[in-house]
Image (cartoon, rainbow, N blue to C red; front, side, top):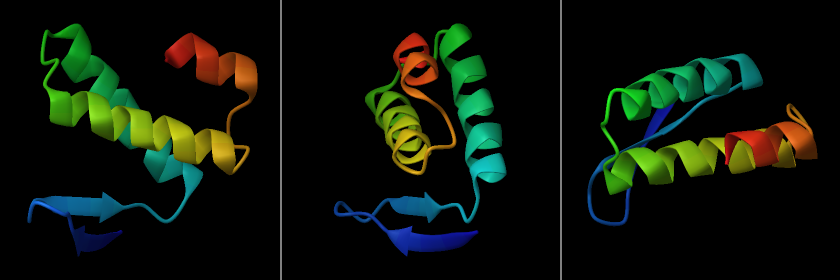
Amino acid sequence: MQKGRGVNGAGVYFYNDAKELLEKLTLIIGEMEADNTSIQMRNTGQSILNTLFRTKAINKAQYQKLV
């Protein structure tokens, strides 16, 4: 895992493989189910979904179900 800097100075994490992205997405979904629906949480989840779809780690049906 590499850490970069976000536009507003917040930490942005880049994961190296689909397995790590799926693990992070699972955590985010759990947080959202526990009513943590912050904008940052939603944006991070959406970015991970986009990356997984773009790299063909998930298909269109899976992507749409998770969105």
